Amino acid sequence: MTWQSIGIFDSGVGGLTVLREIMRVLPQEDTLYFGDTARVPYGTKSPETVTRYAGEIGSFLLKRDIKLLVVACNTASAVALPSLKRQMSIPVVGVIEPGARRAVEVTHSGRIGVIGTAGTIRSSAYTRAIKRLQPEAVVYTRACPLFVPLVEEGWIDNQVARLTAQNYLQELKEAGIDTLVLGCTHYPLLKALIAEVMGADVTLVDSAEETARTVAAILAEKQLQRPASEKGNHHYYVSDIPAGFVRVGNRFLGGRLGDVFQVNLEDETD
Ligand code: DGL
Image (cartoon, rainbow, N blue to C red):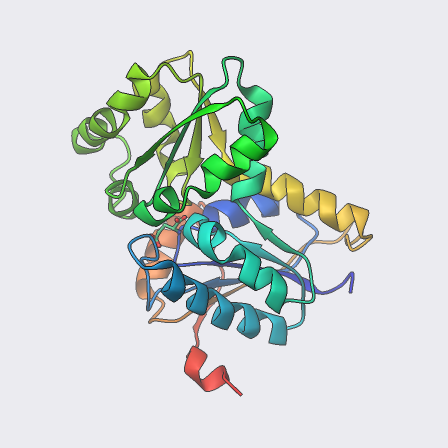
């Protein structure tokens, strides 16, 4: 199994922030990325629908012989992780647990903020994960739906982005949090702006970074890591025409995106 790829999926292009971290931490590993660009966004959809989509993608990637599955999408991790774990015979890693663990490690006051899509925030998955680890923590949450289109448009440091961030984050600032979890694939690209708005006293937790570390730890523990001397290859699948994914994806990955193939998940069902 050592030589098999790591499978990773997202509702679209955003999960490339998680892939980027996995490439950094585990440069020797091959990856298979699936972006569900035909059905994005997941953040506005019901848990039932997102769970069904996630199951279909899980089957698609499992058929391509992956050794571990990363659910890069926060919304899918928030609502579909238990059912994916039941479905898959390999380790399944979501982004919520690693982000929550890091938040609990870095907070001093126990006052933790979480931002994400409407679906992620409605699910309370981060709040539950944080409270499991630190029951006395006080968790403040805020959905920031406009951040996703802003990032995809490349508007990450202009006045529109700044005003939007100030508006969304005002209540969290007033709540006196000392830690803020960036609970959405797209938010790492807004890190500088969010840091500027929140101020130097608030530590930002990037779920993408923590997830890559968790993946490395699981592969090491199960002795599934490739030798460090190897150089990984990366393959990309999307469910809509690749043009938009390629354009935005190259920005996410700093121009390192390889060939992108369109697939129809319906052709895949047995
Ligand atoms: N990937 C989603 C997430 O991390 C954001 C985009 C969407 O709503 O599908 O929650």
